Image: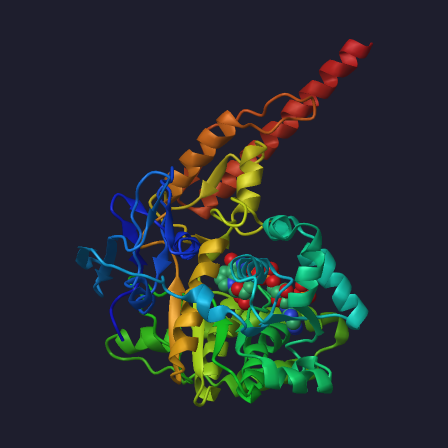
Length: 512
Ligand SMILES: NC(=O)c1ccc[n+]([C@@H]2O[C@H](COP(=O)([O-])OP(=O)(O)OC[C@H]3O[C@@H](n4cnc5c(N)ncnc54)[C@H](OP(=O)(O)O)[C@@H]3O)[C@@H](O)[C@H]2O)c1
């Protein structure tokens, strides 16, 4: 296992994303553009071999014929987290890019979780950049084919995210998309993925690449639900992938937080059956403390037994508690990451001789650039905090000002998925490769900087109150303990209530 953890692909003074590189592959020209902000593509070690074939020259908008020169900077990170060696930018020549688009032409995908945030961005990217992709089968929960087709149209095809695909195909966009996207009724919690037998048989003959993005992202979900979707679900998808006669690679989307609360530089190392964060920690203690190996089957049995023993009205609550208790028992912070880590163990033990890629993104946020800057679906992760701050409802936050919030834009995650997919699909070598897609080494987002950006943003673009007056925000107060934060919230609540009582009594006096 290499000690390379996260790399930055840098182009002289500017940095580029894989996205830029993909775009540059069209024809024998390199479109060069200078961007306002530097971006970071956090790319894992093995992807660098593909990237090393690249050539992009950072100059102002101008077209130059290939071959051209590039500089690719790679950081090697030592186990202590320090940058061991920064490879000097190299000049290289290339003629046909990294070949992602070329490779994906005619390929047939099966993608799960396609109605979700991440997989939608993935599908959009494939359709926009590889219009001659074979087909994309999108597995989704639905009562029947009609409902699946309705979901395909409403939640995917006719959404704003696909605007650029619409634009490039004009009036025929609907026909184009319906020709490429096939809605498949299915469920990762059911055997054979809940697909109709005939359809499943034809997929077995057609599918080249399987991407499992289905998941339940609720941190404190019922243990049984989390296990079924996040642990057994990927095993069922893997089992189907193994039946596919033309399979090139199975890609599973896990999470960087499967690493639990490990500290320092975390290697891209798979979990094996029996591993746990608690066991790992205990092995470093002196004297070594014994923690029994994590037995995934025993956890499944425990969930089933609890269900059988519980009355219907309390089963949900008990299952939630059980998930958190089992996660913490083995050193993970919540049921979600525990169930995702167990999926990695199961995948490793069941993969046999197919190429498997596990992608571990950190917190996925709105798109950086593609297809639309800032596209996001729903209110996720930090969004409630940001919105409440902008509306003047939240004036403080408990955090370490120097702490890092590890986030990655969805389009960068998708680019990394595609690069890893093509790398391993083209090698056709059995094995398991892990890619952590994160930003804290390459481009850390520190809380105090985030709060400063938010302050600047809401000062220049304030929310309006009900009377259309701008809401003024103050700099976010940072609390280093939850108790201090709670006291602050309570004091503010009391203050607000007194202010509103005062306003009401003034109004009453005025009315009289
Ligand atoms: N979002 C993040 O910050 C983040 C970070 C790291 C890793 N991840 C991982 O990335 C993957 C995608 O996340 P996301 O943000 O796109 O999640 P999401 O928006 O919640 O989407 C989840 C998708 O999974 C589908 N799904 C859930 N249960 C299913 C089942 N039993 N059978 C078939 N499909 C099912 C959902 O379908 P319905 O629409 O029918 O519910 C939905 O399409 C997940 O595996 C997640 O663990 C996410």
